[in-house]
Image (cartoon, rainbow over the protein chains, first blue to last red):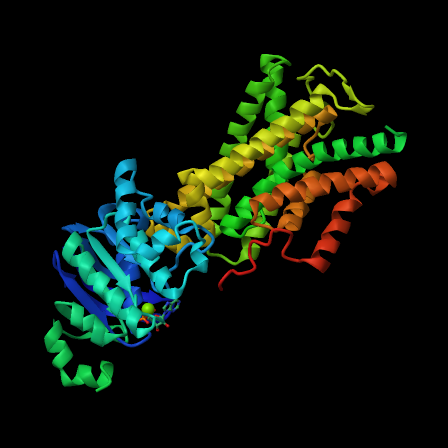
Length: 235
Length: 297
Ligand SMILES: Nc1ncnc2c1ncn2[C@@H]1O[C@H](COP(=O)(O)OP(=O)(O)O)[C@@H](O)[C@H]1O
Ligand SMILES: [Mg+2]
């Protein structure tokens, strides 16, 4: 349902992505793992249209979106939870969720989506009137995920949701990622440095190294691969 | 009431009126700065153009046409502001800030000279849109012109506050001001919201232009320069980027100016703004309602 082909992305003279290709099928969780600076965020930002590839294709449900503006890409059904959460710190939790539903105008539907988010993240409900900037890191991550779900995406791009969180919270976030995929049928492309967790929830994975895909395959094969274990699983 | 008290209240009332006009102009500076970090030096001239549109509408529809004059001037200025952003600032959005700032000064000179070319350099008498009736409240003069000018300014500011706080577009404006990429990921058309910001700020400035024309009875192509600077200082005093800050900053500026004129000397009228600017930069450089203190870099 989402496919990128031979992407080349540059930041000035820095060649951030070099012929990157990957695909995500409907209903899958796919993990993209790699060290800091490998180009994981760049891949997601290119899919969302926040940066433009110099060459290559991004195809979503058969349509090329490489030149589509980011707000149109959201309307097409791609949600993106950016690295570092990027919640609107000076707005309330509720306003953040409302902004997540910006592309929708079905008032009743938005309300029920908000209720679903609150059911999934009861702590957000307790803090719905609080400014997002006052939430803990874990709560902000939940808000960022909930906010992206408010647009009813069919594909969700998740950029390092475990970053900076305590192990128990990481587990909770990954459980939620699996739930969203299972219960709401949302297809997920997950970017992580935490390869262990990312491969444990995914069906397939890709390994990115300095802008190139160096390995790909079933998640359990990658997790068992000695090179991956050495480089990313601390074995 | 004692004469001294009446006098003080009179200065306060006059200061509030002047301040409400500075506040209307200051809002445009602060909103544009908040959203694209640009000090729009052409903003004072958009205010001037607004006053002239009102002048021509009244010439065309008659002196009593205050409401059409206000509406058409606000719409015209909104279109002007949006066009300036589109043609002059947008192409420079990723250029160094100095480029946009220089361009803004260029646009300012362009507007002043275009209007001057058309109407000449002299003062024009403003149509008497409201027949003045004086009312005294315990000795304090509050004319009907005063009430209409101050009332209009307050209603417009309340309207803006409503748009920004309550409406979807206002929430989008705040989101874009805070984090453009995150706003894009919400499906917000960032360029559209920037245009909307210019439209709102310019419309308020146009309203201020007409209110000034009505209050002082005359306009000219350079009328935007000094009030523009003062309103900019008012926005800095309030905390540039902050909407309540611009409102409070404008009122503080107007009252301070009127008090100095009333109690010290009217020759210090224009010095007040710079004196206030120096004080705020010494005591609280981020302004009263610091908007950009916790900004992440
Ligand atoms: N805005 C930017 N400007 C210049 N270089 C950048 C920018 N963002 C990322 N890079 C560079 O691009 C490469 C890939 O970065 P990124 O996609 O953020 O990696 P990852 O998400 O895997 O940590 C890195 O070398 C990084 O330094
Ligand atoms: Mg990253």
